[in-house]
Amino acid sequence: MGALRLPSLTSLSSAAAAVPRHHLCRQFRLPLRPLSAANFSVQSSTVEKEVAAPAPELEQSSPKPKLQQEKDRVITPRSQDFNAWYLDIIANAELADYGPVRGTMVIRPYGYAIWEAIQDYLNVKFKETGHSNMYFPQFIPYSFIEKEASHVEGFSPELALVTIGGGKELEEKLVVRPTSETIVNHMFTQWIHSYRDLPLMINQWANVTRWEMRTKPFVRTLEFLWQEGHTAHATPEEAEKEALQMIDVYTKFAFEQAAIPVIAGRKSKVETFAGASRTYTIEAMMGDRKALQAGTSHNLGQNFSRAFGTQFTDENGQRQHVWQTSWAISTRFVGGIIMTHGDDAGLMLPPNLAPVQVIVVPIWKKADERTGVLGAASSVKQTLQAAGIKVKIDDSEQRTPGWKFNFWEMKGVPLRIEIGPRDVSNGSVVVSRRDIPGKQGKVFGISMESSTLVAYIKGKLDEVQSSLLERAISFRDSNIVDVCSYTELKEAIAQGKWARGPWSASDEEELKVKEETGATIRCFPFEQPEGTKTCLMTGNLADEVAIFAKSY
Image (cartoon, rainbow, N blue to C red; front, side, top):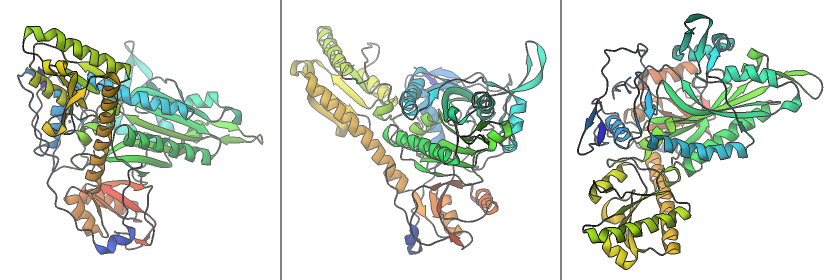
């Protein structure tokens, strides 16, 4: 089997002792409820902050990853080197491969199938909430980017520019889409004239290019896939309602489909999207306890509509600028699923997003057993498919059953059905769960009778989905520390945990935390504790608690 050989990488995880929960913090303690690398570059455990680096170049002399044939797949233990473990899983589970341009990736069929499952769910939700899909060009005039000052300042280091087309130098350089707020506003200005044209709510599934300095497959690459929604409204209240509605859609998706217990909240001013008035986010804790910004929703206010002159005539005949939102989830969510649920055996997929929910492995030794076993396996597959279950038979004869077991565990398939000659005689099957290794997760003697088998398999898939979420919630909650002072915050971050504490300090002091600890404010959670709170940095009164963590 071809395995991607990856450079050795330093560990991103470290053992952490528990931080005591001081009695002084009890008044604001908040229980979290389940609502809700550049060829992929080397990342160091000792360098957590963003470091300026030369933009990736297409050098012929750059070392290329090599594909080698190996008898067995080797995965670096997660506890030994989290980043190497992550890259090993992507290679061995056949999710993605390196692209020829440094910092890009090729998403392989199995990895793309996970993205398709994400699309399938979200497409339904977007349409249920009144949005229509459409598509905008990926080439944007550079003058568009310049129109919104904070937007060009925020994205300028990441822009990819086209200066030559058709063999001639272009009169105006073009930006390869980093995001679409500018071109969307250009078109909205042509489509919106009256209050009757509002709200205008659209979404597009597209690719985006951002010239990242440090890359990591799925999490951060030069080009990635995403959906981006854009809406225009007549009032600020409608825009705020929309921004909150969409972060709620993302939150429910994370919990119910991906089994990732994200924390939803508002970004600080420092971390707000370039050009937005407010940014809402869902933050997920990965297996190395770093935070992953898994989705965002922005209230853009009138920043872009004023820059582009996007106006409408209201009911009183007055000209007004529209109020806007934008929101997005990308293929980095696939990386989030890997880092949340995977183990040393490989990928572990939540059934709701798994391309294959059940793998059937027929087992026989003698030639005269083959027909009966394969016939039974085919019957089981047809039964489950008819019930809407995503099932596949591995009837290849070049590999042993044990090899197949390991292979499909690597690919994270939630359930495995084994059928041998004795099972055929008994009219039963053996069922194994991916999330419970060994004999503990294996059940013998499950009847092949259609209604019995379907009910059992559906029940087990639900159990796996719930188990993954519960396990992730437990891990998240055990690694969030309530802090009352900057000293306690620094201790928590040094131990690799998330710190949660009252905050009302300045932007400058927020940047000081980032400079000294490598941690940023991930969000001010929507769920806030009651009672009087004192800012951990200044000692002044604070209205909210914030969550600090190192992040991807």
